[in-house]
Image (cartoon, rainbow, N blue to C red; front, top):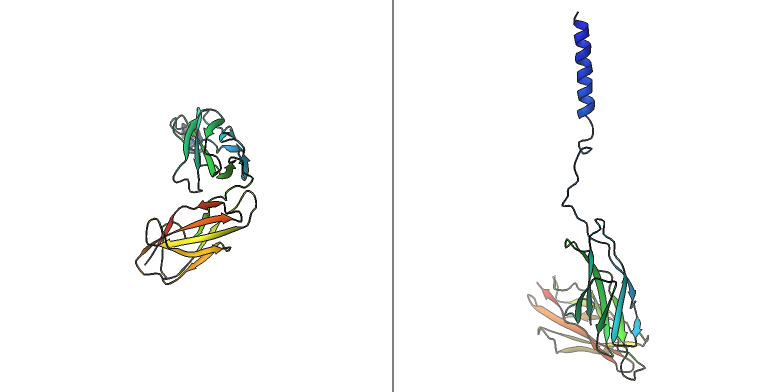
Length: 235
């Protein structure tokens, strides 16, 4: 007489196991507050090493996408150096283009990011460099140098260091470099003049001291660009 009851009990246990033994996440409810950043905008104009014949530059990019279909705006930054400090222009656009008026005869960098209506931001796009045509110019100034080493505001455990940078020119002109290095926030001590190499070995440094340096770039037609000030410290 007990067998029917045991059979019913076994069936009940199996049903409970099948209902409760699945994936714990199978019945989970999506978080309504979850939000992902838009995709990084793809730059269209001006691209790297572009010469803009008008100082009124129309920046263009492809639209970003947003997984939650939020509205997207774009943050455009323009600077005379690749660190984007200081900024020459900072603009917001709700379209895929923006007109920005710049000075003639200068070299610039630009980048852009997407921001959705819930404040989620993409990373910045790669920096693109371009020049604006000057009045009656057939030659363009070099781009500002970009630091390779040491890292900005790094600390070194030595009294000598190799300073390294890169630089380029939209005309492909040969470049030379003047190196300024001292303990002033705006260094004025010329430690190397007219060198063609993009490295400089600084020796005889004092310990526990903060140093500042900058690179002045010149092409063979004497067009000149003064780089930003970088710094490092010794232990």
